[in-house]
Image (cartoon, one colour):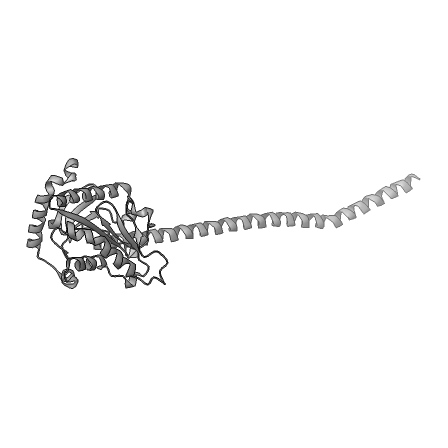
Length: 300
């Protein structure tokens, strides 16, 4: 009986050992699978992280290129800007008065009449609707002073602005043209008629004539970065027109209307040029009349 028990014990141990040997490869395989799966997961995570970093780097590099290109375009526009005070080609002999954000100069070409001048923001700005509040305030100060000066000469002021070609980084200039009281009284009728007929009313998406009388800020009537023509009769506003076809719009539209109002040849006005010596004399005469009304003296 003892021998039999011993034999059973040894037989059971042998069977257990064999079973253990058979199961060992399975455990080894499971361990290998766990290790491989873990490594695969880590590898995938690293690949995803690297991919995200590459995408982020690409986006950042693309953003940098766009920013550099925009900066280069802006610099090129500034160097070509005829109203940039730092431009070597700027006609400083035509400068009348300089504020902190805007300045006044005489018109050097295409003068409609004596006293034709320009109110210009110092910063490169495509339109007055894009100018900041401080710049608009200084430009308004120049308008007030010009009106006071011409009032003593029994004249009224017409202010015209053409805002087009925004993609070319233009520099806006508001033209001031003095007219006799009688002529100025007829100006609203002339401009309203011309604006109502200037573009095809059936193709236009906006009103041909926008009434801006009583409006202090033109941007309340015309959104930023939208091309337009504006005329103001003194500080009481006037009319504006959204330009829908810039290719067909004449940049001399305002001069053409004023030439008709004054019974002058618009083509002669547009071709009119003068030498620097003559422009310097005109500017000195203008300064002499403007001096007592010059608001910039208060900040000097």
